[in-house]
Image 1 (cartoon, helix red, strand yellow):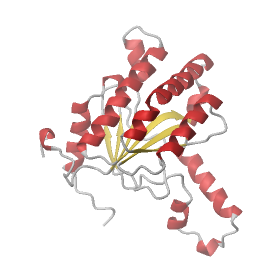
Image 2 (image 1 turned 135 degrees about the vertical axis):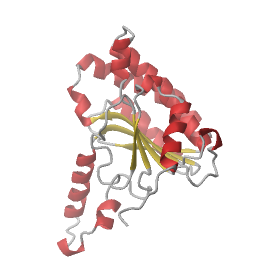
Image 3 (image 1 turned 120 degrees about the horizontal axis):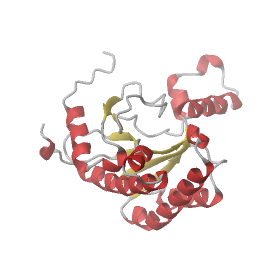
Image 4 (image 1 turned 120 degrees about the vertical axis):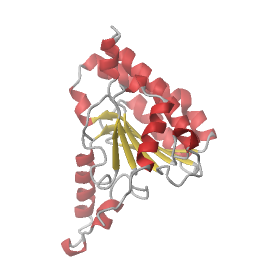
Length: 237
């Protein structure tokens, strides 16, 4: 399959793609800019990726915006990033609704600034009945922590140990009712998943792009999908 032939109806296009948009700060440093400039450029690229993915036939897209480990970054940078996210989602909330996007926030909600928490939860509520396309945003997210929260929910229901199964755990994750990722893309040349969807990505195909996320393009997205389509997925069989 060539990149130019990828279409919405193509069965080789992954249904659920996860992107770890890495390299914003390094991109800024490379261009002699402050880290916040890299984050702003990264958000502009993220918006283009969201729109492009729909045109390629990807039905579920997950973007990792802020990990639990990111709280260790300098406080001014964190504050700016949270404010930037708030402005960005406030600006595009109507657009997401009108275009049939169902929005979901994955991650802890108790540590995120009130303004950002309110806008993200508002978009979730407004788009809850949309079905054309699913967009997940990971903010204050950790794959391991997600599993811990799922286990705690199960324990609180006093489920018998003999009844605990993979299916039961999956139903208590934040991604319950979502298909497991088919393809995970990480930018900036880093070759690790950093715990994103630790449970769900057991058989996910991985693609590591050398481009820093602000340089990520439609052509690179198509290249990742073309690479995915050339693989034979056996799921352990």
